[in-house]
Image (cartoon, rainbow, N blue to C red; front, side):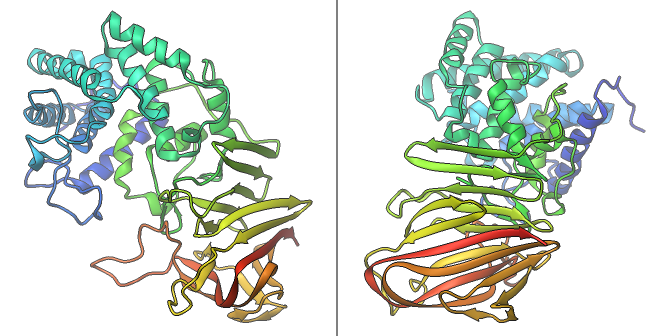
Length: 482
């Protein structure tokens, strides 16, 4: 029978740890005792043993403060430490040893060590404590010697926090200098990418008991203002979807903790919940959003807009067709109706937007060349809407599944109605519209070995029949409440 070690966790933190343990058990092999998972395959992949996820699981076991779990955690950690390479790094998967090619893994492991060193040195025993101290120093040496000085913004913050929290006086000074020099007063590109925001919060929590009462208060306010009904509502620069909601990341689990909310059911079995072990107790909590949000800004050479009211949230991003294609990049995302989303993924066209009163106008400047014999290339513009509660689709007031340029399209969900109209803004061309099932390109669960193709979205598709090389299409959208 398990014995409970003195429990100091709050109820909210306990729920976070319990969720990490629940998901960890789902991925744990009864034969090996390890978490088995591959980052590019689905949950059914049982062949590979990742280092990071197993250390997270061990840390969650420690944080449960149950004696049997603590003993299990010590065993997992002790075995994983044997796979540290002579230069101080770890392989991504145990079978890769002695190769260790993913340099950022070291930066992500050390926050786990920090939590163990800070809170559990009194329970893990002298032998394991000595092994972790040695491993920690090897990882710090590796990071200083092998990671580039110019890391991405979010990893700069995480590395600086590691230096401040775990380094000697020299590394601590480097970390403090780095953190002081990082722009923190206005939104940066990493502030719009959930995975990167998760890394930022982990690092900042290592240093500051409260983000709201720290030099990073503008970032804290950004977190609160851009979290709405369980979703990030800022420009979707790199956002993937899993079934009917955005794919779960550590950022989403942090937000659930700060907002005291529950995640959508589609995230229930996400291995990202193992990262709940990194969520630290905090007095920070989101307050009710009493005012609308209307924010405009620039991310490099791209303009963006965020609008939020009581019943919808809109994010817009100008995109150029020749820009580097980023995975999960969207030009528009609208949350509306009864938990629905409407997105326009970035395509080969340039896209810009105007907001005139209550109407949004999107301008698609199509590429000069098109292969009309390729049916995929003819699908030049597509709008995707989630179908967990399908909106009623009408063309000029009647049920239909096709439409022509200039015809009024309406989508209705609950007491909200969305009006759409495609028109030729410049040049010449003939187009035909279709309404059908499909999946947004960012959908991560569209099929698999155990089931056939599943459509989680409806698609409003504009197909090119013929057009001039210079051609621009306008899409007008208006959301009303009935």
